[in-house]
Image 1 (cartoon, rainbow, N blue to C red):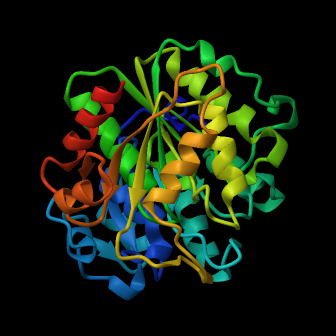
Image 2: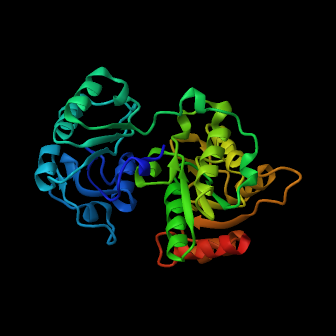
Image 3: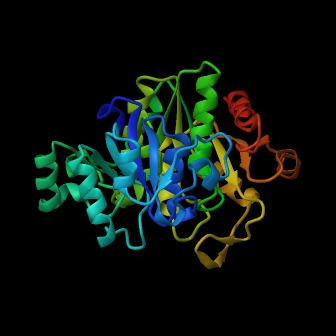
Length: 353
């Protein structure tokens, strides 16, 4: 999906994050408020945190003092110029909560397009189609997979791109792959490099990746081919392509999608993301984290093809102390939340390339 092609950035937006802003369940809303190059948040809707600001809730000095309000009505009163409602939370099961229906309808009648990451596809429901037509607005379901005619298996065409491709991988889920990808991309742009990036989850698409797909909605046989198409599309216009990874090769539940991303992107370098304090896998208590050493070995053994040069793990993006983690694993390391952290990682990538 290419939201850039549908909107003229920056788009004044209200972010719906009811009950979850600043939490892991609200990571899409958090990401849009912190990083979006496409949507400019003018208000956040979360009745549990109303009266505070986004900077306060997120604990970030680099985030604007966007007001958090209790309803879409209150948000539109604060920001009548709003052009889009971004649904930044996917509740358990991914369905549309009844309590949100009125808020979404109010936004549409006020002239707001709706950008949704729900498993419920609003654009396919007659009720929402009719309201959109009446209100003259558009519905974007970012989790909708590519149409059948756009699906194909990977055939290696990514090998022919002229751009350098960098894939962000992880030792587990929810360790910061999307954040690291964006920070690398931003550091590259600030360094004067012609960079673009590919998202593989809903947050990255809403943040404003140049191309993206919610990869867990793509049929398994076609995942590598879809990723290959996205990388090739971005590589046509940029010298560097940063690709958001998913899960971990050593993760028993999700390794299939991780391997498809690795083969579809066929990167020239990999940045590995790790939380050094994590021992058990997120949401899987019986699974332990394999660790940096085993993940690096898995990546290097499965990347590329036998007739190609090896794909290096160029750097470690860590939640911990960068110098300590670099010494522990023998890899250049950086913490993207530290001053100069993204630049350290970028320097290591450029050295490897």
